Image 1 (cartoon, rainbow, N blue to C red):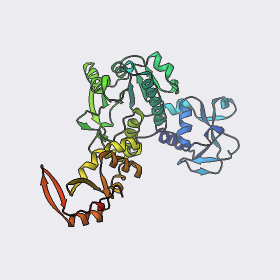
Image 2 (spheres, rainbow, N blue to C red; image 1 turned 30 degrees about the vertical axis):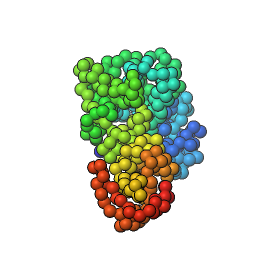
Image 3 (cartoon, rainbow, N blue to C red; image 1 turned 90 degrees about the vertical axis):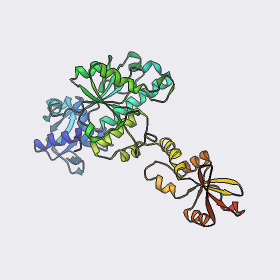
Image 4 (tube, helix red, strand yellow; image 1 turned 60 degrees about the vertical axis):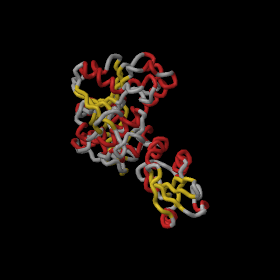
Length: 372
């Protein structure tokens, strides 16, 4: 069962009061794509409330977000409290919020990063807040080991996320959380909906690339276990492999949210947050599995079907230029399937040095044109 969003909670709260539509007395929501969610976030942040107004608003939206004619109920800033009758206040809406999990970015290894890398982390934290704000309130984003340097470099809404100066274990104990999911690319088990019942997800605060930051994510789990926290180590995969899965903090969070809230499969969620760079990583691994080796006049040609582009682009976010780039990097040739069938007819299979080759006893190398 998909997890409720803040918009769902807001919708139910309005419905309980018999309100079927609402407008806004503020220009800031004109370009909003999700009026229910965005208005609810502002109410939770104490910026406004829903009031009964004496005249219908110019425009309004029903509880599914569809535009309707005006309404006698409207969101307005709290300064309107003396002018209009409040029907849904920040306190009332906060009281209805479920216990959503925390999504923790652990900055214990902050000092291992260069200034440029620290800037990237701050950007990813800000983008993570934006993602959470689209589903919940944004305060579910917790940054532990948040020191003064992080706070000075972070240009996002620092007051709307949860920052904690101490260890992640202390934060969890203060919140009464005794079991977490640690997103770890080296984990043995894959994340599933069975893991969505924990009180917190730890996404880490680094990119596990190598050097002095290699395999530091598992160490976060070890520290938590020493502090008495139960840790489920889980990885995100794309068709069974971590290659091709985005490594940015905000994209990992986005994948979890797509699965948890929208009920999408892991492969679908990974595809949505994948960039061509990640897709090319995976393509470099997949194409060699589909290679056919031809020997023509003693020269070897490594060939793949041109139609593989259509097959892989269904689950890898690749463009034709990405496909060609990887072909060139791997020194492969792409031929149409019908041409490969023809080559197979005029060739014979042989095992050479333990590998299968198709040997063409004709001097027709022109039939193998590069990437045609």
